[in-house]
Length: 296
Image 1 (cartoon, rainbow, N blue to C red):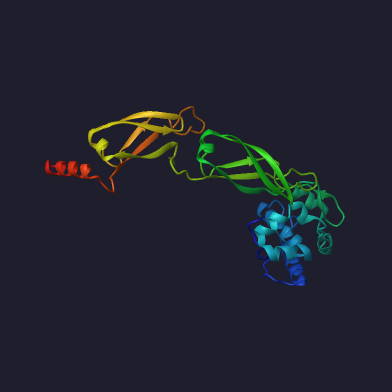
Image 2: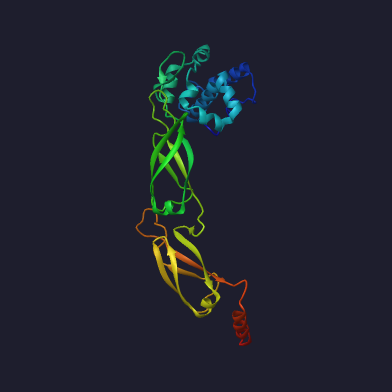
């Protein structure tokens, strides 16, 4: 629920007083209580949201942190276990002759965590975390192992991450159990790594293909020749035909990125660009003038 506003869930405005918070919770929790809505999954989900919101806003310290840092900042500091620690709504439900211990065990899974009026505790999976993982162009191409440091509930941790060969910008890796601590013996949350490939000065990527701009001298564009190209697989020699035009692509088959789930690879394209000299020597100028007289 890191992206949801606890005040909105309870139908309140920020800065609501404790009695307003309790009144709103009592009204909504009774309305959406599973005993009043048997078999209604939407009501059950709403009931969970209402209890989580009240667990934070009814606690002065948690409410202060939530008001100060906002939803995202608060959830970086508080795990699900922290949110429900010391939470007790059993008295409110007993006012209306509604179950507390059994219903929370039922909808949260049973087994430990936060307690309702001294009853059994409920287990619940810990909060998932996410962070960006920057990779160089070559790291994305080659894959391998990368050491990642991250903060987990106030503690700094290091973990070795396996980077798949050919991973693309925007991909997401999941590290099971590296998120928030599970409640009452529940499973830990997961850590999600969002891949950010740092732009390279020499290469760019189009799907599984690699594009490399290459400057060609004016004379070579006219008469053709050979060029050495630095691919990610080493230096390769290519031939340029006479009369090459700016923007022409020369394809080196199978030298691009590995394709996910396939043994094949994309291609490597040399994007030819014609270099026009900014200044000429007297001899070069004379030759160009002669070429111009000849109609070139």
